[in-house]
Each structure stands twice: as C-alpha cells, then as structure tokens.
Image (cartoon, rainbow, N blue to C red):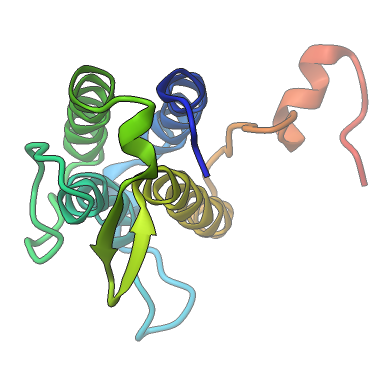
Length: 166
C-alpha cells in the first residue's frame, strides 16, 4: 500500500514505461492472437490494461479521461499504445496534482470492499503487471520479440554478450 505519492510516482513512471514497451512491441497482425478460442486476444487484453487505468482510479475517486473497458479494442496496435501513453500520463498528473500523502489513507469503496486509496494505487500497478505478463506469453506465441521488464528477455542477453538463460 502506498503511503507517499512520491513512492507511487516513482513506481508508476517505471511500470507504465514497461507496459508501454510491451504495447509498442505489438503489431496489428498480432492483435487476434489468443491462447484459447474463448480467451482474450492480445488486442482485447492490451485495451483492458489501457481502459482499466481510468476505471480503477474513478472507483477510487479520481477522474481521469480514458476509454471505457466496454468499448471495442482498436484494430491498430499503435493506437492502443498511444491511448495507453496518454491515459498513463494523465493518471500520474491527476494523482500527483490532486491527492496528498494523507489522502492515501482515506477509504473508498472498491469492488464491493473498502480500500485505502494507497491500496487502490498498489492494485492498479499489480493489475497492470499481471496482464502485462499475460501479454508477453501471447506475444511469444505470435512470434513477437518480448522486451525485458525486470531483467533481460531472451533476445536481450546477446546485447550483454551473454547466452540467454536456460
């Protein structure tokens, strides 16, 4: 749970940049990739990540412009990444400009429970990270290069002059 806006700001800058790296690795042709016929496609999952930023912050009492999760995902990977970049930037600006450290302790109704706003920010990042991991699996299945987020991806080891970890 976040107790300081500055701690969230530091984490959000990194995490949203990693999400953007993953989204920028998508192609229009990859957006229909699924694990199973009934599972979410890459495009739908990427759009869910994008839309959930504003949706989750709205539940926590902070208005951020963003697409509703119920809208159809764009057919353009570049468009999804661009909208995510805008929403992520607006979210950071709203949190740092409108909330205070003391306000992070305030409880708000979130998904049938009462959460502190600091917890809502933590879950926002964890939710995004969870789905980003799902995206990277789908990216591998689609034959795309996966960027490293918390360490080098298979393709990045060569840049370090090392063999990929087994």
